[in-house]
Length: 115
Length: 114
Image (cartoon, rainbow over all chains, first blue to last red; front, side, top):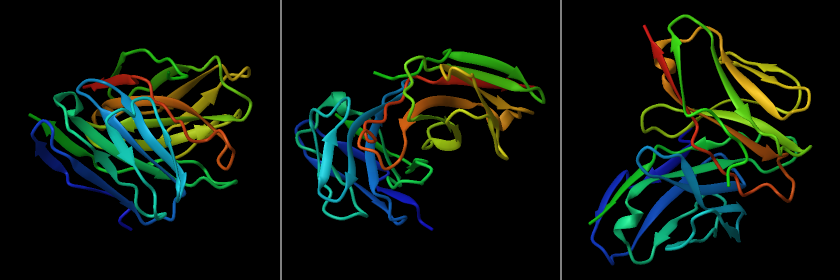
């Protein structure tokens, strides 16, 4: 099982550039989410989705877009990168169905530096 | 805002039990308590969860107070590899309508020393 796969693992951008962080899961999870983690800090929720075609904002959504066209994929788009978006980004997924444990599975993270 | 509060750091001697507290005084009746840990810069890893009864698995035990306003994660025989950041979070029952906005706090940095 691949679990939750994030690409790329490392990325360096210049201010103003755009890019997409990819997240894919092969567990047929309904729920997917993106977090960012700044050095020495906890996880902050950016966006989440409870199923294909459904997305919603988390704690820190500004500067990021998401879409959920399939159950498996949940890409995170940075529209115009800023140095404040330098962070480690984690994608997580879980079941959203009645009777499931709700356990979150995390990817290995994508380390983004914006110069 | 995170719905839980945890001490920022704790120490534990190797081989001893590590008891990590968490306060969740505003927990709702349909919310579970989950514990995760993050080693170095890896993605967080699920440890255990519970609703109102105490739970035990191969990794840890979870003790939830009768009023459900706090809980304690117990690592019975801590090892150096248990040094990590431990997060306590609350989450509604899967499948419900208020399921998605899952926030983490700062967590507790547990240091296990020889």
